[in-house]
Length: 463
Image (tube, rainbow, N blue to C red):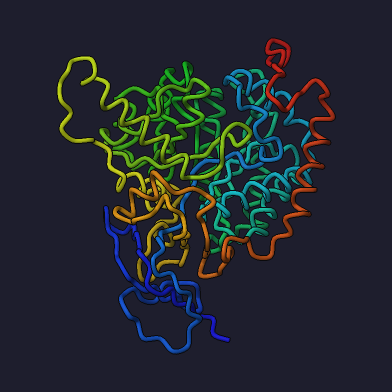
């Protein structure tokens, strides 16, 4: 049986160029998982043909920041403030995760992402209590068959009180994981460091943490500009210490100064916006528009999956809706007519694909449908009336699509979701494992109520 695949006759959103849509177009996927050819009526004799005529075909989404381990306690934080989240998760439930719970959380959360058309995930893994927790997190990502970046983020010692933390990133474990799993950067799963940055560490610790990233030759992802303490000038501090880099992704950026955004742009750094969590937990308004003005291409983050949904469709809608509201607000006050909307759907879908791949350091491999790139591809179902008639495919994806329309997903040419069903996943066993982990973790804190009615004793938890 042939190992080549031909997707026949789709409506292809390429993300290679802004707004590019190819109609009635074929995509030939080679045996190596790379895209061999794109065009109409390709003549291929030795390929498995998948008829995608009438369906939207687009690059797999890229989520540039997700705390995937939290999936087993999903929605416990749906009504929590940032302070309640820090107390309830970081000082509360997180300490009860066993390695097997970390595995289940990562496996569940990564498959949720894959099921909804996210083919690349930056797993911001900052609950690594022991080396066994790190091993479990990595193994879970590898077992899903998706493309992922395991961002090693330390554990409770680094993220617990007091802050700013005097505790270094666990260098020995990060080095071990690098050597054991990621001696090569060519696999589907690669590695980065999830550092706390100058908002959460002392200057000396921050400098050592960033030096560790250089020593291990790893990209960095770091929270900055989230909430009131994000106004403390974290980017100015990084610049003063010579730590800004084009290999760093800055998460949130909501309350950074305009000068700090320009510093990121001048350094070639990238940014990750998590609009749902930022608005819920008081980080500030999502920085999408301000980043663009500074010359930085935003990317998208699901972030706290213990709070909000885990798919890119909802995130795109939140982001574009919020930015359009901000853009329109001055005209509402002054009566000035807004002749043209500033942020287009074509820009937004690139934030979710090729720009995200760039922030993950993977844009040479994924993020767009182009010859020579990996076939990380999503096919949407055409049976939904929400997409009928198909007048503006990019607008349809941003405003009307949802996870239930994700019919087929390919990662490196492998069909990991077929006709609406994840391939090779025992869903009953996964649901049972997730429930068992949830029951164990919450059983250690009987006062915790998963309906959101429990509010942690903040003073006790954060002291």
